[in-house]
Image: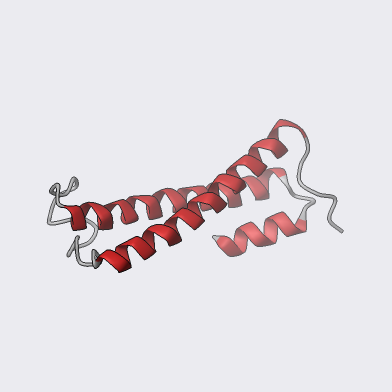
Length: 104
């Protein structure tokens, strides 16, 4: 049975990271729409670099696509942090563990 998320500072930190990850996911989807609408999907033609460089040239379509890549990286780190924190601090909250693991 679930007792809810961990209490105290660790529970608060988990809730903050989970909320930031949720907001980052919404931002990622929104930015993906911007990439699609502006036709910037091929702004960075290669992976993992962009035009063979770590920092791409300052062209609008390239910057839009590259920002989408960077936000995806940040989202991945946040989702990983949420899952790790759930497993470490919310052992008694099955909802937190299952949902964060599925998100991962």
